[in-house]
Image (cartoon, rainbow, N blue to C red; front, top):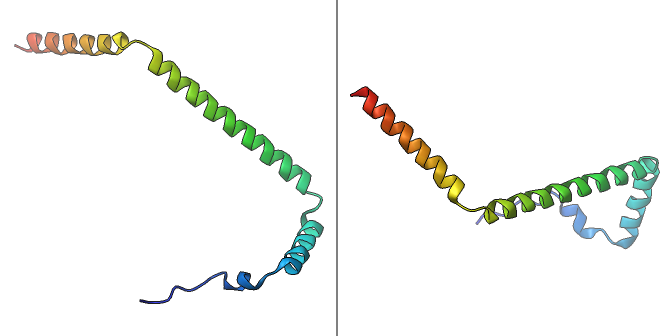
Length: 89
């Protein structure tokens, strides 16, 4: 069995002090943009939830409809096939 390489093996030795230092550096670099990033992330999550809810509503609506409409479509398609076959004779 071959050993798998650990790409992020150096992260195993990080403790709380190192993570705090990395966090402070990240705040210094990205501090001005963090509110914008959080705002856009929040808007994205809200839009995603709305999309899921709309999809769920559509599924519930489709499942509550009677099946007569779908059988009518297939019956019309069958009539068209029969009429085409008769005219071909």
